[in-house]
Length: 171
Image (cartoon, rainbow, N blue to C red; front, top):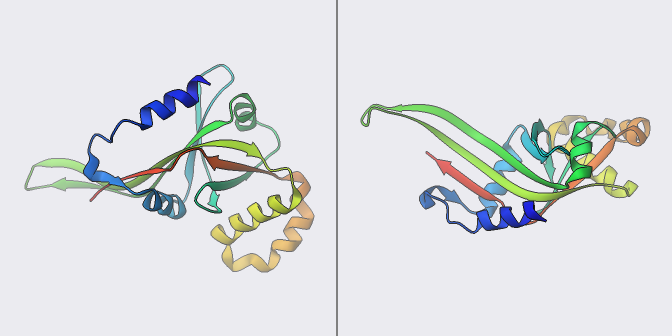
């Protein structure tokens, strides 16, 4: 697949400013702290499509998000399951008076993965539970009732990373 081989080739290049590169573990922390993550895909016509989503990380290689069973995002994933995730957990514009320079202090991360629908009930519930624990931990006593009411109307997707994530920071 052209897209996957080009992505791998690009990742083999060293980061231009190596001093800003973070470890894979630090990049994963950025995903964990970011209020939302941008999911980037390729539309069936070849044009890019990206949107902010709420994701949760299960382990070092697995992310989940939920959505409807149909829509542009689902069309893109069916066409090409290779996706990119990007996140910023901190961003602060700065004017460095001593250098007379405008800059930005940030922590960001990117990851490449393969996205697929979760079909098994247990894993679907697990993904939704992780999402609720991340975003609404104070309301977990209502989780079972919500699952009973809406599990059949909710799609859950898994993103399995195909290579370690990369983080970058400036501060």
